[in-house]
Image 1 (cartoon, each protein chain N blue to C red):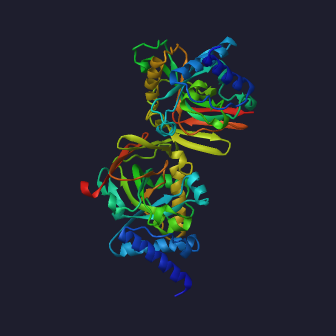
Image 2 (image 1 turned 135 degrees about the horizontal axis):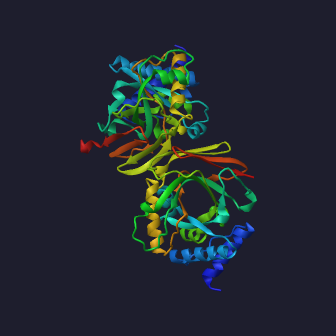
Image 3 (image 1 turned 90 degrees about the vertical axis):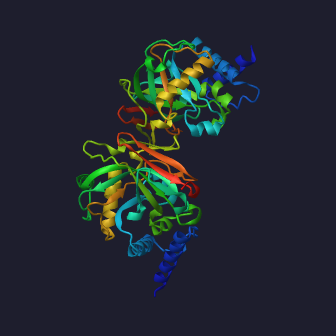
Length: 248
Length: 265
């Protein structure tokens, strides 16, 4: 087993056993981290999971500054992570889950990693979304390379009703989770969520990641994440409506 | 002179001197026993400015974000009085040195077409009385060193007010949901603060109703023509030097506050 494969196994076992692990440590490059991520995903698809899309991380200036990076990161979504709008989600699936409000795009056609087509023309719908993140690392303590290897903490997602493509710059967003309320604007995603699509193209090109028709793109968090606990969490995006999930 | 009067005099003198000299003063809370006393300090400071020629043109509400209320350990907002020398228009340059420790906030300004002087003002009264709303940047400032504030410090210091910069495109409230207005504040083109109307007591309309009741209760009711700053929609941004603070409100236009350093002018 190669070193990268062994690291993928550690992360996969951490997720399956709901047991946090320490940082992978120094010595990995960002290319290696994406290779570990792909190996983790290969293990998941070998168990019957199907790729349903991608998600972006580090899409806020504050988060980039905190992590000392200037580039977004990408993770992969699978059908096992998806829950329906309004559904119950069993909390014991996770290690220490957090939830955050997002914007989702739906792709209308395949995009190869070197496809020059304008990605904006490959989106046919937008929706409000919630993402559940669950780092496989202890206390969410990780480096840039760690979090990429860990599939950018991807753990779950819920998509609200799809709407026609529209300008989503600076929409009001409200996350309500129990008594916790966080308010923001979609401009927190790189100044405008549409910029996340262009950033995605760059990451797909650099790491040779193809996208497929029907897949979704989670563009990045609008506010900080809050602990995902028992009870109802909703995300309200002005003009796109609400999406809801219940932790049980 | 009672001890309370002497303490009020001390707080008034400290805040007046800080504003005059540009050198922040220590907190005044030890001289201001409670919120009513703090509003008395504020009233005297404002009256002194009016005596020297300033004109009252409206009011501002502060502490409208739950997170900020928790930080101050209070469960209600506060208010300050707007004077004509604090009000500026879109892109009118403001000297950095007219402030002590300024910070910028994105807000919605209400301009009233009718008096709101009843003690029990409701959201419905506010909606009826509002002539139009404008995008507005509030430049908050504190005369108290390091923003080391309790609720009584900020109330005494006119709710940490500095200046306001009003947009020039009026919007009528018909059909508008101010809770769902997204807010982005840009500094020299970079987005630096994000928020929405939800963050202001649930809706800026609710904030203005509170303000109208509180001002009526304290004998300083809102009147037709008043400009009302309805509270921050997102986090404050420190103003460290010259810069363009451009506020964009989703569906409600934009406004730009231009801060200049002395040497630019």
